[in-house]
Image (cartoon, helix red, strand yellow):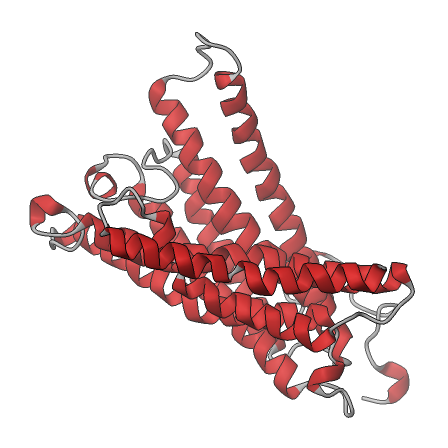
Length: 336
């Protein structure tokens, strides 16, 4: 193809099929953004209904079962359909290649496949909504989730499928940062938002498989009666909590690390100064991603774990404040 006929934003194909089959990172990012906004409003509507129910004693907007369904779907939609896929999927896809000087991500077709895997998993969540919901709470704690008659399997299957999208997106971003940087753009010249996406991607590819396996074990227990988590079958429900929070605490940083990256880009621009402590901020991002894997037990203080375990997890949790404080002090020193 000659230089004059190369595809650009002016001669790009139009129509719905051009969007459905696109491998343009910006278009895929926009599709993630629109999907995320739709699920955000869906989860937000459920939150409003719950708030109205709790606004005054004696409100009877929702029955007990419907409230449990609303609570579960609100949490599951906001976490698994909005925050985790949409934030890196939208911001990362649109900005990452532009910031490293690449024409696209390392694997454009895999990028589109990630979006469709996300959409396919979302269909199971939508099926759950229209088919009566699920009432276990968004954490799907056992043994209730192994015994509940609500739509636990479709929802957990949807989460399992969406996990593949998260893993593939993370792999794509990591490969893009390593292999697609423009010549001369060394690691210490990368925008700090790229460092934030890099740390987020590391969390996605290392933590998500744990959740996926946990969802599979939960479904196997329901289908085959294998005693993994249900004490009535010889299982251990606390084991489920360990698995779930080993993923779900690092997942918090899938949301917050890109936000930290944005702050690190905005402050030096509006302060008209070079960012103070560039390397400190970059390494603090990776430190937060790493320490996040060591503190899951602080979600389980009421689960019956030993006092020693509580002390250890509490102590390690404090360490997250160190790299976070490094960022905050660097931002302050940049401004003043």
